[in-house]
Length: 242
Length: 126
Image (cartoon, one colour):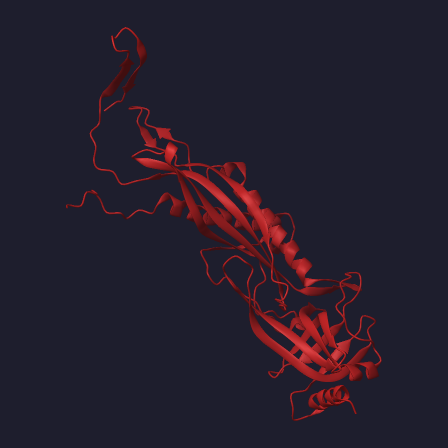
């Protein structure tokens, strides 16, 4: 049996591009937020979030000489963007492409260390939860911002001369299906407390498939009539400009 | 002498032995009273499972102290202070590498039979 696919499969799937787009958007916007914080005279560290993709070993926490505030690690919260699942919709798909909704897990990690404040203290678990929520707020506001409704995918563009599409938008929409705080086991007893939440981020897009070379049609006429031809159920012309 | 009393004394001897595993542990009460007690110090690495499918490498630390020695110091018995308006019980200890660590007591597990108090520790910045 001969191979039927006409070309080398050397371009990433849309789902891969979407994942990278999420990381890119977060990275760029977080850097911009830090710059805005500096302009506003605020501590930019409160807007800092490290962004990773598909990391299996995200963090190692330990503390050296806490009383001197000499830390050997960076406690900046971070997010890890990873692919979770892809659910094509058969009813909305065709031979040439399929509509699908992919879920990406955006896991947000933050750490907290107990600290003396006056004659009281901030517990590490509370500090970690507050840092996590701050990072979550930043991530949510960026990804759900209006300019990123299609994650920066521009609208479909047509050639003015021929009317043929020059670019077809593939990303339709995005939304947060859920955000869940994940529980740290009570017996963890860690020196440094961590707080984690998972944002299930869904993106609807069109995924293409490999096709064989086709033939451009000048037009297509279709009609459906009754048995004796006296009744027309529908009639339509589909014109294309070759 | 009861076996429990013997156990308590044996634990105190283990902590006091200068050639043993005991170390000086500085206890500070919420009121600021300070006492140095010989006890056992433990600090090891441990994995945390935040249920994301990815483990975070952390550390856990604890001290074990003779309850009768703490009583004799007269600064009270350490416990995990949840109230944020108050200072917690604090612990300072030097590890075998010579590094001084500051902790707060986040939870305790007293064994009144064997006269031992285990304090679960958390990193603390002063």
